[in-house]
Image 1: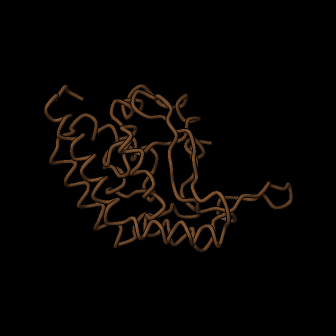
Image 2: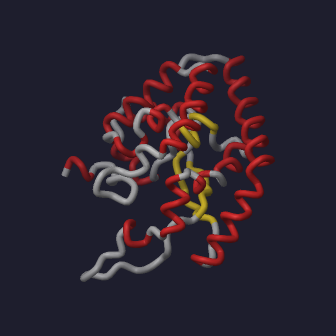
Image 3: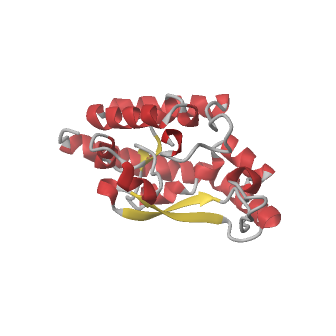
Length: 206
């Protein structure tokens, strides 16, 4: 990513203004979601997990919880598909589980738009080219999400992520945000075929 001081300031202003506007408009919906999770799944309401941020620095990501907890057994492993509840599926289908990340945006740990923050364990498996996705803050949505979300391969996701980093501009962010709204209503690419969400990175190469 080339240095764009003014662009970086505009991106941060868009992040703060967009996150505050979303929270102001959506807080009643978020309250309903929180109460629903509490009544159907109990505590905790939020799912918190360490994820790599800008330059790979870890931060705590927040999401609404969509799965019940339970230990795996040798006979019947408690997979993500088994732990995902009906309420959880609905939240993911509408992308409502991502809303608590608006707080991550306000804290400056995430951006509205950027490569999605993946698992910490993936850091050791990226190629030098793929690792460029960490040259910008992770986002709630990104170029890979509007190009197919979980329906595309890991290779394609990383290519879109790096393309975003290499060609970022303010108007690209606006385009991705508008495309994200359309995709949420279309409910496309929510999960990879045969998986509750997506196959773990590296599994497709085994």
